Length: 198
View 1 (cartoon, rainbow, N blue to C red):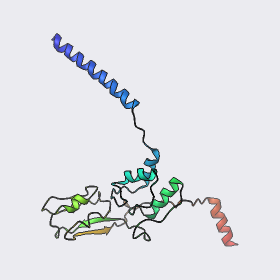
View 2 (cartoon, one colour):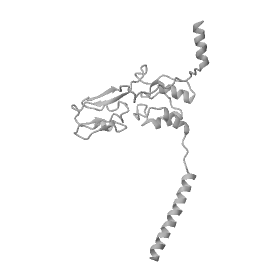
View 3 (tube, helix red, strand yellow):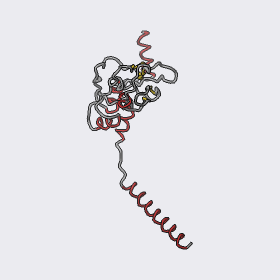
View 4 (cartoon, rainbow, N blue to C red):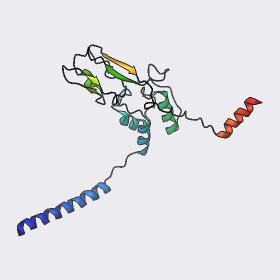
């Protein structure tokens, strides 16, 4: 009984000593993150689609913080570019995309299951694992997880994936982000009304 008690005490002492060493090391050698990267990442749409040339939104946010251009995010649209310009206090630029003139329509993938051959190419292409299925089995999209990045459409050999616009409902409706640079206060409105009436 004495040996067991001694062994338990030695293990407790070693555990406490190593715990203190690890606790001190975690405080002493803590890596501080860049708060600007966190703010930029918060403005990006988090689709993790890779259309910007980076593997996800966080790496693109880090690149922007290091000086990369802010107009490479088609899912975010011109509103995201303007918000990034406002945050970084730089001049906004046009969205670098083929359809930059139109504001992107939020959409999700839909697989026509009767035409799906179960090749799993769409599953491999999906960056957020929103497609459910197995080899030689029917696939389907988990709509609550789909970000609408459009990366699953091209690899499909039978072209059975459609991008359908998301119907705006009470649960999916969101306020538009304010345009940067426009600061209207109550006295400005009153002045505009008085000028219009005069």
